Length: 215
Image 1 (cartoon, rainbow, N blue to C red):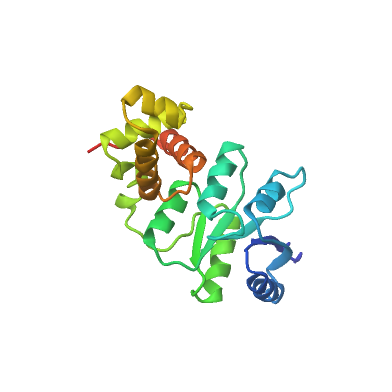
Image 2 (cartoon, one colour; image 1 turned 135 degrees about the horizontal axis):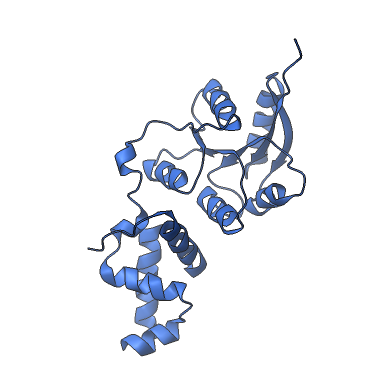
């Protein structure tokens, strides 16, 4: 019987010690072949965009050196790139799991899980299946946008249209400082750090289906 081809695995993780540990574990398992470790989302996206795929499946940490996994998934969607990947999180926040699933992650593991769970998840995802921890599927579509008020959704809409703070202030009759205050609250609710991330999340959620009913 012909020997089954090993699955090539790329690891994206900001901590080089974690990369080294995963490389050692993967190298000891005859089903897998460690091909590369990168520390930034930019490097991972570059690997996905290459003309010759470097890997069959990737392990992507929730926190990378320059962005988190949700930003990576949003950027892959924006560039229309596809990759089979497993999000590897050290945070047990169920919101992270739901966000990653909404953004297209096929697999999800916690760093404190037994290594065999990670390997089983890699195999499933490499073979085209979705493998995630239990979550109430009825609540998967509870997006960050569903928590916004009507005014906040309107503000997010004009941001996506390219309005500047001055334009928003002029057209709504409030000061620029007040606009900045509202934007900060909006970013906090969405769990993003800046305007570009808010607009990218808004565009991604709009593509995925019906809009939330504002409160």
